[in-house]
Image 1 (tube, one colour):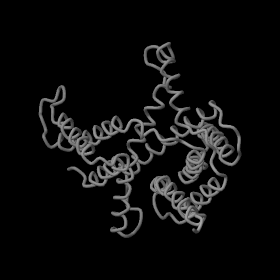
Image 2: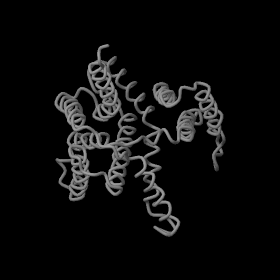
Image 3: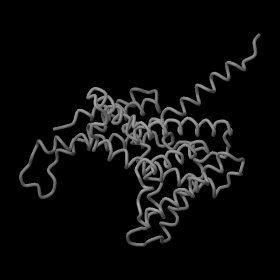
Image 4: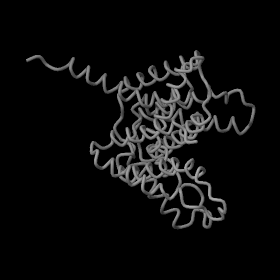
Length: 294
């Protein structure tokens, strides 16, 4: 049977479409197009002798969601490549440190695990240096930090998808668990476009099956490098905002690590979602405070 949790997932995608575009007619067109194209899910697959309508019904929502996300990405192509800043990569680096600690990687004794942790910490240190100093953001550093951002978002995306679909009761109260589960699916819907986009921005770096790093692939890599560099802002953030990001996210992660308030992936995506709003509120308050009295 089709899970009812498909509803908050789809609502999350709709919400993000609405955030990116105020044109409801366009959004309705995107949804209609996705619904129409998703009917291909009912076409018998090759070698399917015994057609099972129930099986195709179960598969249809996933076809719809996939197509919905792809069409949304195509329509919002420029808007879903967010302008990255030192603050965003700082927040992501703090989150990956929390993720490593909470998932228990530090308890692993595998050599590969230690190598991955060291590499990750190196990336984190670079992002911390840029966030807390006025070190010039060169093309190389912007490329480096942008690729790091994509890697983190893909890792979090995969973890989020896996944990959402493998969700088990986290706390003793069923109503709260259900609410938490709805929130997880909604956040997954909100983030799907960005997860797919980050996959797209890292895909050219993977070796080609037939001609690894041949002329054509190197051209694709150069073009992708330009995209990464272009999306990373040269503007350096205020160091007070860096400290706020550290205190805000660190406080939430410490509380969640200590008291297990919610699953770590939910906490991470909530921080990504809430912190920009927190900064916006801070800016509004300070603007009103500093506004001259006539």
